[in-house]
Image 1 (spheres, rainbow, N blue to C red):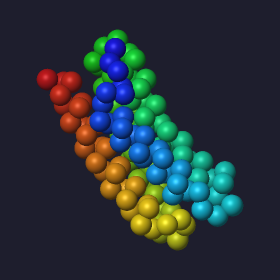
Image 2: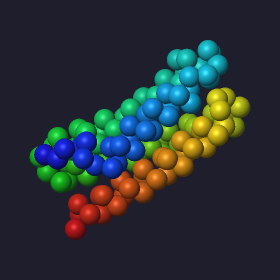
Image 3: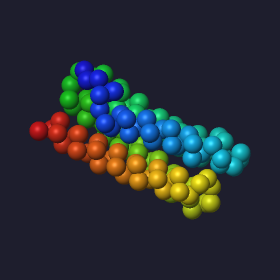
Amino acid sequence: MRNPYKLRITDTAFSIAIKTYEATSDFPAAERFGLVTQMRRAAVSIGSNIAEGCGRRTHAQLVNFLNYSSASASELEFQSRLAMQLGMGNASQLTELCELLASERKMLATFVRQLAD
């Protein structure tokens, strides 16, 4: 078992979740149960999977959950870009979120490689 709160990827996951909630707060009311919910779930899933993986017994199990986190980051990036294309939310906030997501995916991939060594 690892402590997820000692990992930089967890700090970044918290930032992603917070920025997602902020970025989606002014989306149209019609998206409350659509894109807003999807984006927030994906954002929370990133950190949740890191924490769950850290609670597992083996490196292989941790790697699986890190891969789920990376997939959620990819999902959220797509949704953020879609929101920008549709003119929803603040474009600069969404752009910043996409940059943070790209950074998180890189860190996750590096951690997975380290665990494989």
